[in-house]
Image (tube, rainbow, N blue to C red):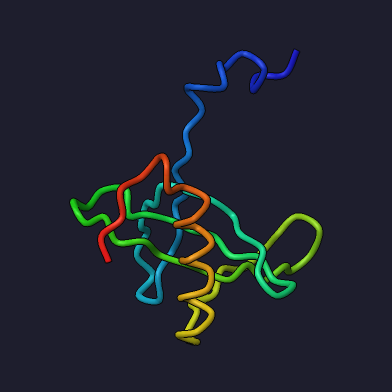
Length: 97
């Protein structure tokens, strides 16, 4: 039996630790992965801040086991991915516009 089988699903952490452009590690709560125009985007929320601001990062596959997360600079893409996220979670989360 593998170790991961011993952890009940509801107790599995949904926290990702990423390194920012300054080399500092930042924890994010994983919210969702959304596909938009043939690309995948991570929707995250800072885990240790009181801010409820959503962070959207593009997933760039490196190889079969690794991927990079890129800042999305295109405002239209950010708005489209956020709109999909809001629609998907409209009954679960409260959004401020």
